[in-house]
Length: 83
Image 1 (cartoon, rainbow, N blue to C red):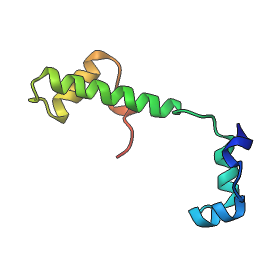
Image 2 (cartoon, helix red, strand yellow):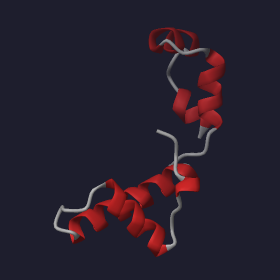
Image 3 (tube, one colour):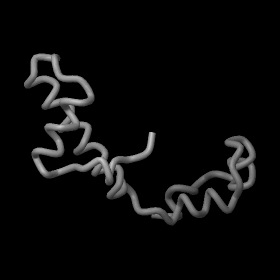
Image 4 (cartoon, rainbow, N blue to C red):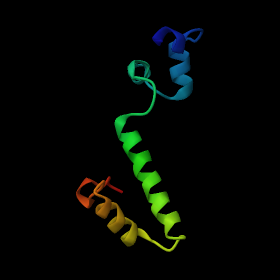
């Protein structure tokens, strides 16, 4: 897998063109493909938020959606991502 990602490219030139260090490039090569667990969790939370909002015919805002998520037991303000 690693060899296929870099195949046919001069790593130094590609890194310079992309504005990344070679160490960052090689770290990226070693990362497993696909989303991380945190990305999956965020996508799941986003889907729940959309479902709750749609089920309320678009009337629920952040406070009610948060309350519904907490009531479902799948989320708490303590585990909320920053931002």
